[in-house]
Length: 92
Image (cartoon, rainbow, N blue to C red):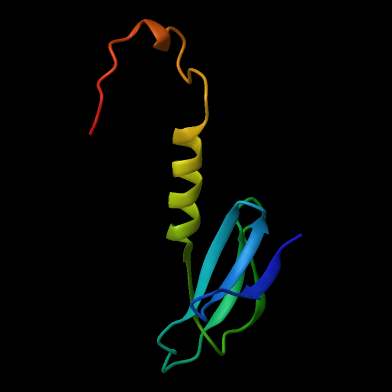
């Protein structure tokens, strides 16, 4: 189940799972008639789903992705077989 919510920066987000969030922003609206369709190649059919009145841009929420990557980097334990035998470099 997906949830549509308002994020902290007042943009809208689509929350698919607890850690997978998409940002939804308004796009430039079309100046001509458009329809959403479903193409069935096997049956060589096209089914009209409906008219498009508004367009949106959906992109991954970068802040959520960076937070998840940071948490994964801080997780204890080796992530690659034999990692404990590799030379470690201290980064100041």
